Amino acid sequence: MLQFYTLLLSLSVAGSVIAAPTHLNKRIAQVISDSTTKWEAACDRDGGGQQCNPIAVNAFGTLLAAAGPCDQQDHADIMMDLSKKLNSPDMIKFAQIFAQQPRNTPDSVSVQYCQKAPRNQELSGLFQCQFQGADPTRFTGGLKVGDQGTIPFGQASILNPAGSCPAHPSGPIADGTQLVDQVSSPGVPSIANPGNGKDQNPPPTSSSLTLSVPAPSAVPSPPPPAASPPAPSQSPSPSTGSKGFAFQNGQDAQALNQKFQTLTVDSPCNDGEEACVNGDFAQCEGGKFVTTPCSSSSSLKCVALPLVNSRGTSITCDTQSDADARIAEALASGGQ
Image (cartoon, rainbow, N blue to C red):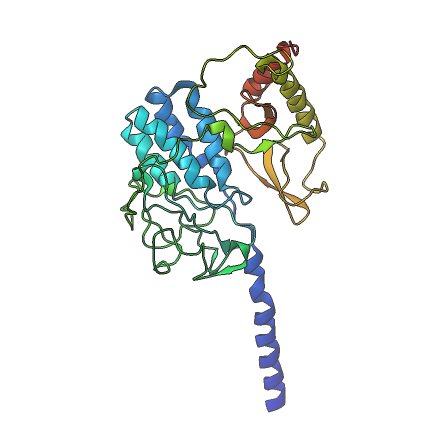
C-alpha cells in the first residue's frame, strides 16, 4: 500500500513539473493603438492638426515585439516635441505615460530597457512598466537580471518591485492593458540624469522611424530629410524629383496592399518581416505571422502607404478612405 501511495505522489509531482513551462511561452500582446488615443485627442483639441495622427500611429507601432529597446522612447520624444510646441499640459502628460507603457512580448519574458537619455527633460527617468505575465528574471535577447539592458538607464540596481515604473510604482500591470487607463499622473521620475533633456540632437522626423518597407531596388533608399528646412537649391530633375518617386511609391504601396490581401497567419514568412494580415499589423515570429489589431474598433486597419519625402513605403494604421486618397494622390503625379 505504501508503494501505491508513493507512486501516486510521484506521478502528481511529475505532472506539475511538466505543466509549469506552458505559461512561460504565452504571448503577451495588446491593442497598441489604444496607447496613444488620449494623446491624439488632446493634440487634435489643442491645435496639432494633421501632425497628430501620423505621430500617434508611428509611436504605437514601437510597442510591437520587433521594435528596438529605444524606439518607444525616441517616439515619446517626438510626441513631447509637439506637446511642448503647442504648450499642452495634457499632451505632455500623455506622452510621459506613453513612454512607460509595456511593450509586447512573444515569449513572456521582460522587455529590455533603453540605455540612453531622452532628448526632452520631461522624459528623464521614465521607463516602461512590464506586464504581469512577463518573467521578471529573464529578458529579451536571452539576458538575465543584472545584465546590460535589464536595469533602467541611470540606475545602479535592479528594480524593486520588478516590472514597476514611475507611473505605477507598485509593480507590473495586467497583461494587455493600457497604463494610460489606470493612472492619472506620469509619476515621479526615479532618477535625474545630468545633461538630459537638453535637446542635444535635433528631433528626428516622424517618417524616419515608421515601420518602413524598402523600395524594390538594388540601390538603398536615401534617408528622409532632416527636420530643419534644407538650404535653397535648384529644382530637381523629373527623374529624381518628389513627383517622380511619389508615383513609384504609390505603385509600390498599391502592390503591397494587393499582396497583403492574399496573406493569412499561416503564410510562410521570414523572422522580423512586417506585413498586414486581415487588417491587423503582422510580424513574423518563428516563421509564422503573429497579428496585433490596429484598433479596438473597425475605424483603423493596417495598410501600406507611399512615403512622401523619400523613396519607399510604410506599413501603418489608417482609415481606408485616407489610405486610398494618399495612394491616388501619389499615382496622380504620373511620374512627371
